[in-house]
Image 1 (tube, rainbow, N blue to C red):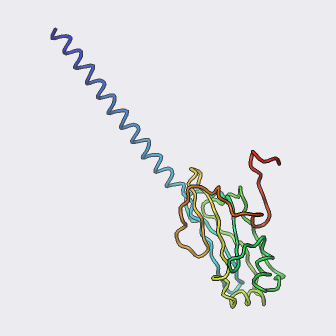
Image 2 (image 1 turned 30 degrees about the vertical axis):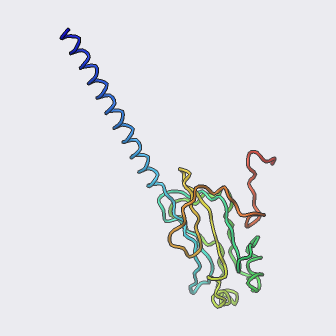
Image 3 (image 1 turned 135 degrees about the vertical axis):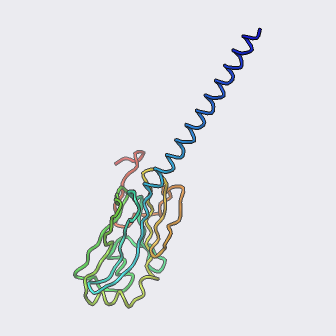
Length: 189
């Protein structure tokens, strides 16, 4: 009978050791995933700036991971705009002759280190007008984006820390800024 007791004890200890090893492996995997998520987190920034070469809005991703854009929205004085010419019309500015517009749409991927002008006007009367119209308080730009691990944020022009979102699925109503629509699989093309 003493042998059976010893066999039972060894079997019990083997189950305990296996349980501890499995728990440690799960914990280690969770820690590794958390590290991977953090090391691939994008951080979009949108802002208005001016220099001797012109003025306008820029977008950049200084984060270590790519940003997958879901949507972009631009408003002037709280009214949604469809495109950059509409922004200028709402600001009561003439269309600049030397402008460089860029549209971020669903499916745009902004890699780590990305920096680009969203809308830049070369030095001209329009650029000078932009700097005097206090557009930084009148124009609101929002870009909803996600990481490769489906964590989502909303970059807001001028904000230092983007708000964390559960998802970017709640899109602003109507036609997206720039008019580019990517149909979902459920929608006919």
